[in-house]
Image 1 (cartoon, rainbow, N blue to C red):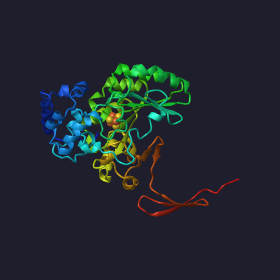
Image 2: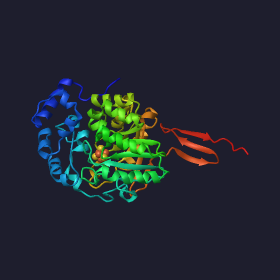
Image 3: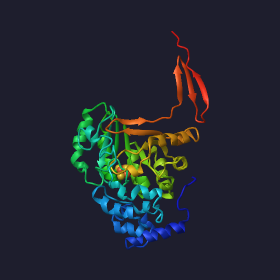
Image 4: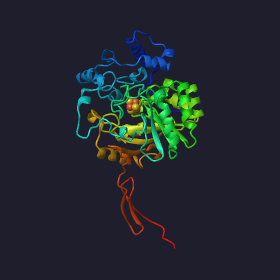
Length: 387
Ligand code: SF4
């Protein structure tokens, strides 16, 4: 496999790991570093830990102090290692280190931009589309993305523990025979123990009309050490598909490549969602590098989302026009598999709306005028209608 690893030099990597471990009063031990529970116990959560990890700007310092009450901060050592300690514009840093701009409320900003609470028939279940539901399994993540659409829930204790909600969820699903597809998300379901996840997936897949189980997870990106043969066995047993979440090519490290290899070799279909973020990936080259790196580890990029208008995310959002121009720079310029669907989750609960560049210029009497990826014009004629 061709791997896309950053940083490439193992000596540099272990030196940075030594520095990171020292912040927690420990020395670097590869076995501990590769233990996902150690990673979770040693997450960066306090301003003073970030002071030692990075050369903070005043805006970050204020963000770290003030954002704690609004939306918790946490970064795994694995992800922290990818942050440039001296560059405030580092695309990894922008995703997980808060800035004081998070306290600004812009026009159109919302607490629940996708209107999920409105479409929730039982706590922790969202039923919007006819044949599929979203099950919010838990409210914790390995690290917290500053643009999270569920910041009102995750990290805040916003959800009752699943064992207290699960009977009502299962009862609802049993009664709604039109539901065939369940997406488990959160928070991150892959932070559950194998036994708890096995039990949850088993209860849902035992419902006769449920035929498709998906899990939305950023664990392979934030905490690839969690992807163990035991976890893969549980996912395989229940024939789960995984929707992963990556935003920058620098996230595709050696460990992430190995984790995705374990999943792909275990027969788990892998797709990735990317959120379009200002300063992180809002240029054609960054997106291409990310999507190509994902294909190399057998992950199909399938959605590029316009960032939801969550309160305090204005500094991370691009315009829709910029998104459309980026898509024009991808479509036709690289493999079709490397081009995801660009979509907006319509604010207020309208669901996902694909956004496409204008490629049909005119459509009249079975005669279609098209513009291709290179800006050239072509015509297509529909077949004649036969009686
Ligand atoms: S991993 Fe997903 S749910 Fe968790 S903070 Fe990031 S975007 Fe939100």
